[in-house]
Amino acid sequence: MTASPAFQAAVTTYRGPAIENRHVAHVAVVDARGRLLYAYGDPRRLTLPRSAVKPAQALAILETGALERYGFDEADLALMCASHSSEERHVTRARAMLAKAHVTEAEMRCGGHPPISDAVQRDWIKRDFTPTPVCSNCSGKHAGMLAAALAMGQQTKDYERADHPLQQHVKRTLADLVDLADGDIAWGIDGCNLPTPSFALDRLARLFAKLADAADRAASGEPATPRDAALARIYRAMTTYPELVAGEGRFCTALMSAFGGDVVGKVGAEGSYGLGVRAGAHTVAGVDGPIGIAAKVEDGNGAILTAVVTELVHQLGIGTPAQRARLDLFRAPVIKNTVGLEVGRMEVSIPLTRQAT
Image (cartoon, rainbow, N blue to C red; front, top):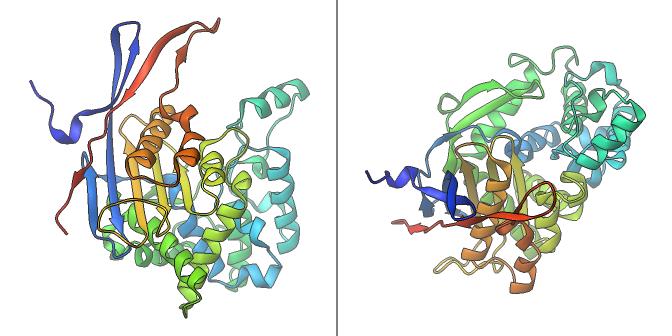
């Protein structure tokens, strides 16, 4: 029985000569106007982007005036967009952000959790350290939201709840940014205790195309709307401080470091990813402007996701061969066992289909 195109394997892993797993993925590539250019699988799959929408949440924070009111800088803005590794630099900056806004860690409504980084986890175990909310990979976003609530003239209590004025503002901002009506977005609760949206995958690509487009407009010096200026500022913060957006050895940091400001990228839990690519940094036929890319891996596997995204970077001719080569570690990693013996391999196959525009 032949699989539906929407459920063909994008990645196959082998152990020896035998197929061990097949992984299904979906991809959407859009232009600056949001038109679907290329697709694989179901480009309109209803998707929980999770932390891949942090740039939109950061936009909502920025538009309250909180950054100016509390003296947050571009590095702080990058941490608001982060799913960081809980390295010392991340935790220290989150604490400093709380101090700038005159709020306390006790007011944060994200919990502590084991770090994403294995190195940090080993350090915490040696020190018998119990993580607190400021160590959460989302602590920058929560510190920013506490400040945003105050900047709106609201109380910080219950800032994480869906009915709080801050979260209503976030919902309106996101819907506008992805060109959807409020009713077209379903909402759940994320791992860090904030509302998290679900919408069509190509709308995530739309968000990242807007980020790249705003960066291009800012670089050209053409007049910008306040919204475009804010998006360009977020793009600049993330690409200037990629080590704050993720951390040592992490894909987001490696991706943005490799392309020197031409690409912005953000992972979301359970296999979602968004990329924005500036004009001139890709070779998509017939497209002179920026593009947005969104990917979702059905089983949520992170290693499979980064292999998919790296393959897309190659297929779409993003950056130079030398820049793309810096991501080869993620493209098709060798599978080794506990003694370092190579026991398997990964094959990625994502034949993108050109869409009518």
